[in-house]
Length: 141
Image 1 (cartoon, rainbow, N blue to C red):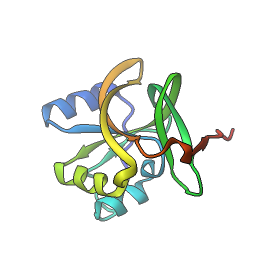
Image 2 (image 1 turned 30 degrees about the vertical axis):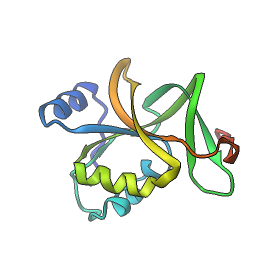
Image 3 (image 1 turned 30 degrees about the horizontal axis):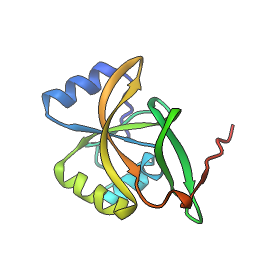
Image 4 (image 1 turned 180 degrees about the vertical axis):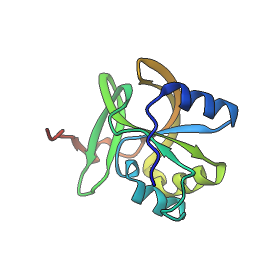
């Protein structure tokens, strides 16, 4: 039911050919269930494609937990790496829904991520709220 994309050329070629934007996610939206809930679509859809978590690397950012919340935030941090997934197949309406879901705490920005040793243009949600709400993210092994 879920399509896993692992070939960089598939992502780039499909995205460019269909003028589809790619978003990099590093938290709750990396789950199909949450993504479909936010986009208000059936779980039976195969419109969206998502890569394995950790397959995309956002350089010079760092991931933090948000104090008293279950979701993370990323901010610029020289030398930092944020591991996430890429999602493509999103429409302008989907981006409106994602923007609404992310709210005032985040801003959608453009960046490049490393995916299969290539740089990919993406959009991602950067934490813009008070940095004192962020606590170090502990990566569980």
